[in-house]
Image (cartoon, rainbow, N blue to C red):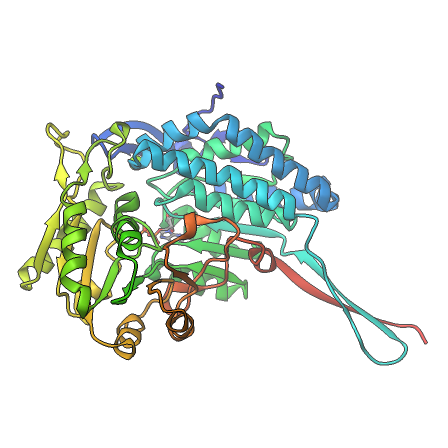
Length: 483
Ligand code: ADP
Ligand code: MG
């Protein structure tokens, strides 16, 4: 299938146009370091126009459309996304450096979000409430109105899919601000949604810089809800901006998620997950299972088996579709290199590193997957989200100690528990602070059905699954007196 769009244009009220004054940002392919094209650099004025268009769309046919029809359009977007899977995959592979298989998985997931939320649109119901004699009381689930979505560069398609899909299902209109380093698939997504019949102005996309278009969107007085996925620091800024307007926010801010491996774990099942949950997407994953906690009895065995796999991992250009691609940008490579250096300078031991393939482009953003062992739980590498292919291994003795270490960071996004002991599985699932717990697996294949979000500095609110629809809507209570 062929579809064309001008990467330098933004989408406002159904019109594709240049950002104010024709401002643009360069798009860099991190596999080569070369500029591949430009995207629009939206301004505050562009955001104002987008919010106005979203408000008008809400007051138009979208606001009156029966839920079933909204659902059909969202489902149709999903079908179209599937038709354009190759285009979306190719674009993402070059824009953010994802190996082809991973980019394709994201494209498929975005389509699946539309399928899920298209089907869910007409299934969110209110309640009737038993009350005093002479009253009938019921609740309605209504859209917030205009929703702002500020998303990161690590899973651009999946995150756009989950937040736009959920928001549209509830009848909201949307302004989407993709990340500086990942604007292309958001624009193509909007182009495809248009082709699927989404009315004008329901989805507006303003690409640009966080401190400009992002800040303008987060602080806009006519935005009714903000969903944000990104760093803790910017999450705070978003919440402060929204607080000025008393606007609800959903914040998904990453983590330092443990995978806890007990002596009785099925290691054949566990080892691939212990490795992959840290190196998938070159470790640039909010839910990366990057703190590997291992009970003493199997400690050396786990390290040896992980080391064997990690030293065989190949890192190279995304189009070669190897185990690991480049990081998204030179800036991100620099951050991760600094963590690895900090680890070695503080005397930590590297148990294994992956292989950079030969003849890599000099300006490519490559980092070797790295496994650190015997990492103190309170050290920088065990506490901070690295957002690169770096796994740390921490030993523990008892279940009580495992709980203490697992809960010993500021984050609480995901936890993996590996044990064959059923009672321990249940105890641990309760004791560990996290928004998602996986027992004898990690990530469950990413299921769009599974509510996702954090506690602590990982943020609050839930996206994904049916649960997200409550966040993307507001409850109204109606009490009718009729005696
Ligand atoms: P990362 O560090 O992973 O790039 P960020 O939290 O910086 O994550 O970015 C996530 C998203 O937030 C991006 O779309 C970015 O443009 C946007 N952003 C960055 N700074 C701001 C800001 N001050 N206000 C609103 N959005 C911002
Ligand atoms: Mg890029």
